Image 1 (spheres, rainbow, N blue to C red):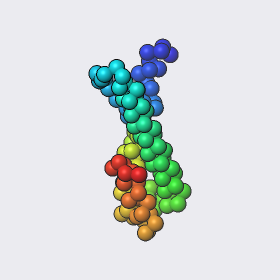
Image 2 (spheres, rainbow, N blue to C red):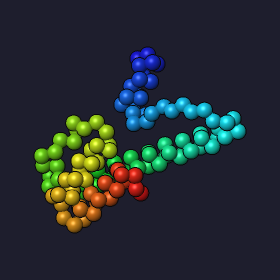
Image 3 (spheres, helix red, strand yellow):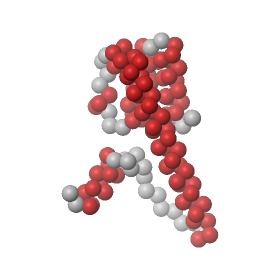
Image 4 (cartoon, rainbow, N blue to C red):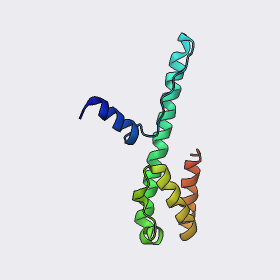
Length: 113
C-alpha cells in the first residue's frame, strides 16, 4: 500500500478520523502556546473517547441482550455515535444503574468529564 493511501486511510478511518487540520497565523513567540493547547485538546479528546469505549464494553458486559436486543451498533462508524445510541438505550431500558451510566455517557459526549 502506498504511503499516500495509508495516510488517507488513517485520516478517514484511523486514529485521526475525527480530527481536523487547522492552520492559523500567530506571533512567532506564541507558537508553542498554540502547539501545547492543541496537544491538550487532542489528549482530552482521546481520554473522552477511551472512557466512552470503556462504558460501551461495560454496558455490553452488564446489560447484554436487555440493551442490545434490537440495536446493531456495528453499523455505526465511530465510538461517539455508538455511545449515544447505547446511552439512550441504557436510559430507556435499563435499571437505575443503567440510567446513571447512560447519563454519564451523554455527559461525556456533551463535553463534560
